[in-house]
Amino acid sequence: MTPSSPPLTAERILEATEEVLRRHGPAKATVVDVARALGVSHGSVYRHFGTKTALREAVTKRWLDRTTDELAVITAAGADPATRLRDWLATLFTAKRRKAGADPELFATYRELVTLSGDVVDAHLVELTDQLTEIVREGVARGAFASADPAVTATALFQATGRFHDPEYAAEWEKPGAQGDFDALVDLLVRGLRV
Amino acid sequence: MTPSSPPLTAERILEATEEVLRRHGPAKATVVDVARALGVSHGSVYRHFGTKTALREAVTKRWLDRTTDELAVITAAGADPATRLRDWLATLFTAKRRKAGADPELFATYRELVTLSGDVVDAHLVELTDQLTEIVREGVARGAFASADPAVTATALFQATGRFHDPEYAAEWEKPGAQGDFDALVDLLVRGLRV
DNA sequence: CGACTGACAGATTTCAACATCTGTCAGTCG
DNA sequence: CGACTGACAGATGTTGAAATCTGTCAGTCG
Image: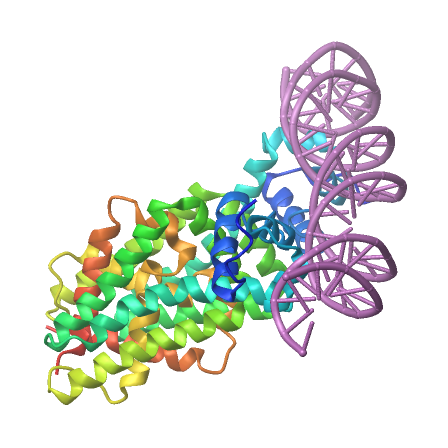
């Protein structure tokens, strides 16, 4: 069908996998489907990803990394600490809400994949918490935040805002009061950081 | 079998239901099982609860109310506002963790029931948030807390601590860092309430 | 008379035969 | 020689017929 030429790379397989997942959902997406979408045998896919689990984890990591990268820009930005913290949390909430709203099937799909890829998700959460730690540390250094241990404070902040980034709560994000709840929570947390 | 006498009351049915749920789990517990445990026909159970759903909701409400009642004592106590708030949140966390740890099967059972009884759970959450609102209002009245709207602040507090009372996170409660995470979060939140 | 029973229809769940999928690997092809 | 194929064994998922359950109600019993 397709001109046989373009070489089979891990990236091409991941793209095809995401497309198959979007079409079929995580329960029905098979390795054979992915291979068919690429015009190769499923044995070739196994050359790049040794198990279906590895393929799932790779595509999940790819998805999670998109959010991590978007947030890294804010972590590095130069605004004053309170603003940077607010921006970071708001961006995380907005990004998640956008993804959940724009393509609900794909979001639901990744929501299920996430429950199957514990280690990948743990690593993602560590990355995000590290970014938050950096923001808190910078705030302490500039005398804007009080925190005996930025890493502990960052964990507290991340856990406190769980309702606004944990996919478990995705159904709440579109409700009328959600934005107000988020703003009230962030205000309370930022007040708690005052020196 | 049993001396036929003790009259069939809603309360006796709920006790038997909880026992059947503990034994069989929510998926396999049938109305016929409950009737058998009571030595009556299942038709008699339907006299008190018109549907299986109603029975499930009643037994779920009973379970949730035990926690509500335990917390109401603290809400009414006379300690200073910050202590009362800390006590209330700690008691909620401890009660949940105790229930989850002491009888995991029953806890898992109620965890599933809760997902099926939306309205009952919503009412429960409103009750708890109302208790928190009362504590915040009292704190504002005594000049210990700053809050433009105690109800909004109470919602923020409740949502912020979700990880330590939402059954979804039960698996995290026994982990080593959980108590430390909880303490750090409560410290941050109480600091945020300072005038 | 009112609490309870038990037989019943339709809805839901179980279970086992069948079909599909995962992961392997000896062999093909350029 | 190395990327790829396709047939295969064991694991997993699907399907539909049989079993069980939910909810009703005419009838029994004290």
